[in-house]
Image: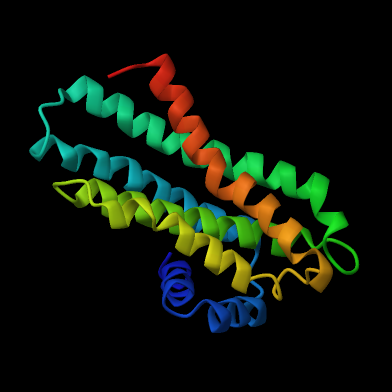
Length: 182
């Protein structure tokens, strides 16, 4: 987990060298998810309970929100892998590398989870936090070289990345909020 967090914070601080270091490390993508992403998603879900000190929400509502938080990112991870596996061959040079695709998705979902942790720990809603997913798009854009995206298809790749990685968790959250209004 510490190696995962090291690379995650390196991506946040300096995305281009971060992607280069991740490329040189070449760790197993499934191991990154099981030792890094999944525990981080659990921590993200647990930070939902911190909002108890700021809101009048009951324990049951907070438990529902924690479960929804975990599910929205967990499901988004697999939805993004599916969408990438279907559409990525159109945008990259050469044969798709499943390990790189999964690693790319893992780290970008992890950054979204870090943003949610920050959001959960703040006692008030700050508009700057609502715009932080734009930073995730910048990290994705800096990762186009890591993904070997064809220079003529970067815009289309970014659209795929934004829809499958950034938009999906928010759509799932909206769906759950529609089904289970608090």
